[in-house]
Image (cartoon, rainbow, N blue to C red; front, side):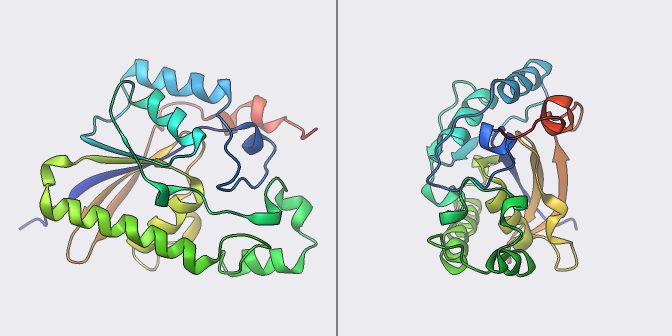
Length: 220
């Protein structure tokens, strides 16, 4: 007998100017998305490629709220503080290239983020608040399965962290990185909560990151 699953969508916010500059952008930076990213989202809505959802949880940061309102116009949503991006402290606003000479940053990369950025959010605190999200999904599934599909509109770092917890251990960590405005459809089984399938959504067009606008951009 096929195991019963719930459908959950992880949707990353559209690109901001800071993303265009390839800068780290944590939870303190509260930037809106670029017009080019908003246009792509509107096109997807017009084409009817956006999934229908029963429940919508959104990070309080402006870039996530704007994205949710574009993808799901008029739909009520819950702001969930635990969905915010990790705070990168002194690395906020800096690029990978600018940080490469920093030994602590190289350790951060090699440990998959387990090192704390200067004045940033500790990995354990980041993981603990995302564990709350997993527990809330499980509680909702046990109490109100008619509230699914559920969509979460949030950030690249938390998406990577949550998929790393949900997919099999042999899956590479970076496999489920989402482009700006992109997303994943996860079929989750219960007891324990885990992904039995993960597939990319919004894959019928050209993401902003693959256009000359993004590829040819030089940080001022």
